[in-house]
Length: 124
Image: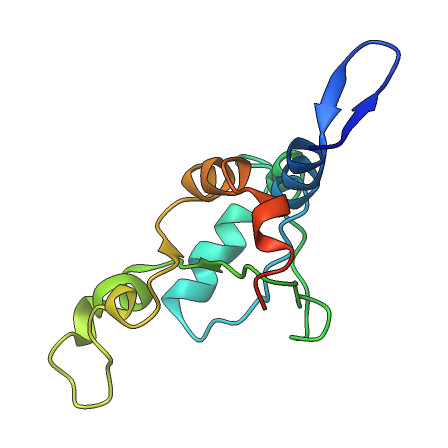
């Protein structure tokens, strides 16, 4: 495994790429009602998402990311159906359809930190 030597620390390629990934989360801002309100609350100074590297993007092209892809779910409707759980138009428990769904940004960053990039590089 290749390593980079800097003046004060040593870092492998996996650590360098994972640090860049977990420090640059650019979610697509798509919300309809109360979920959009929760996203607006996240972007306010109390929670300060910029310190986590979160920058909301307006189009999917700007929020595009290479493999592996992760999903950030916000709001009870997106997580489990919420108030509309028994409606005909709600897909219940989306985490069973999209297995990479994470319920928190800190857990997502921990998962990104543990990813082995050198093993994934030639998977396709």
